[in-house]
Amino acid sequence: MTKTEGEIMIKDPTKAKQFFSDYKNLLTCIPGVKEINGNSFKAYVKFSFLTIEINGTVKTHEVNGDNIDTLITIEGPGIIASINTLLTILGNKIKWSSDYEVSGPLANSLKKHISSQAEEISKQIVECSVGKISQ
Image (cartoon, rainbow, N blue to C red; front, side, top):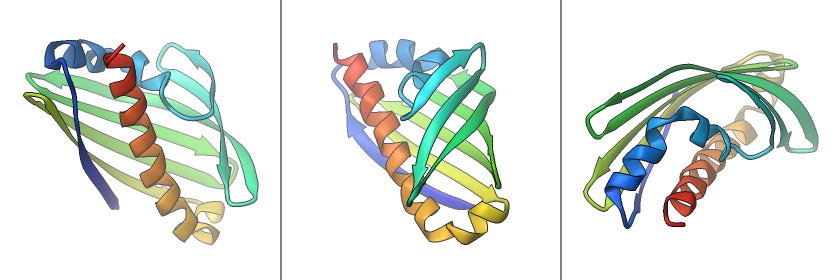
């Protein structure tokens, strides 16, 4: 399992908690999402020279005080991923960490690229979310 983490400043902790309490808000910030149906989504993701269609599902989304814990599974041709993200709202700051595990033949051949891509996507989701909270 690989971990990526960071923190970002926010203006309104109450608005942030409301936003992150609904997992559908997070889905709209996943890069490449083309379709959302309940807790499932379809996205097109570019890995190196390939663009692949993936299907994802929000398995759990739990809000416990200022902690929001979300588990998403993703499946695509030759790739299976599990991403667990924990957000903690600390006043005007959000600390986040994502643990992810990727397997499958495509994952094995693109392992190094997938790690950097996963970190970049995690940052994009958080930055997009904070942008929507600030509106």
